[in-house]
Length: 453
Image 1 (cartoon, rainbow, N blue to C red):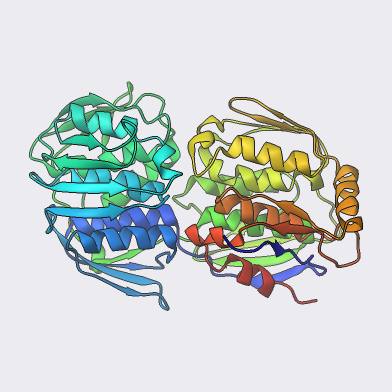
Image 2: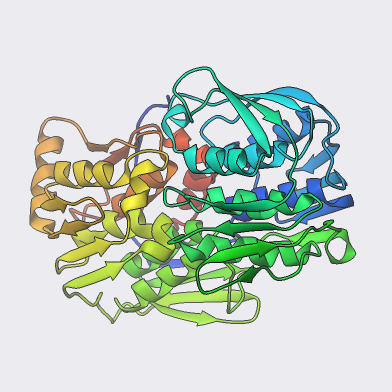
């Protein structure tokens, strides 16, 4: 675990153009689709991070040829048309949820394959039951568990997809349904998946990406049954797949401009991105942020003469929950009380995010009420100053726990850039900043580069 990092306040308005890393969710979906397709596919703008490297390494262990160029953000993978070259492998998925779920469903397609999967301690607690039960019902795989049933570590005994109908419990994570939407059509018979109540944002990403690799639009009836016809995926147009920039990462820099004024240009984002996290922009526009959504970039700005608009709010983050920590962390600067709802599923992500953010905000003097699916926060900037002053008097900084969760580190780092005492001196530190390697290894370098005081 890395040492705590003190956050230096930013003293001038933001003025920058920033190329965001590629989306983790899109990069790992594209790697699976490229492996399922025939021939070579090159991902342009791919994310190079801990989670995507876990996926690349696993595909190599399974016999796929994969070439990487981190400097140009390109990954080239040769697909095998719905076959897996290696019939056995031992794969460690770390704490990468997309790799864990997408690979488990992917491995089931190879009849006779025997694959041993494990993850770190946190992954051994994360929900997999909905996917495992669906694969059993479809007779696509059998499982031997080497610890707690329906959790890592386990052995997948692949049987191949042979059609069928099942109900998928994807309430814990939409990745469970996405994993099946990617892999289940590789058999020779239709598959029908009932998935009541699944969160739609990431399912829509999966559907659009399937289409880029030659799959027809998935038929979904009013009862939320997804009907999948057998498909042989093909290369995307020209053998190239452009990975959209990560809009979860964009949330930190939108918040930065809201706090510090100025402007930032985010190239590579169109007016209608695939990712549901684009909705976070509207959340901050309510507070006075201005965003021009151009054809190939976003121009984000806030005039220094305009104060942050402050008022009590209730916001449902269900469709863009990866960004709720960004908003919660900066609430001490937003004035009125806020209720954040629709986030119950985040208790089962890298950590219990509701409990974690409630603890950290409370340590900063912010009154927080925690419920199963929501948070109620009453911002108190004076209390934040009092806690920070007490820490300084003891020769310390307020230190935020990150729970091995990258989003805690990045979200609270944005709060720490606020010049709380108007003296330009740090007052907040982030524990284990290296956890950002999961999705944004260079985040703190980029944050430092935005200072020009």
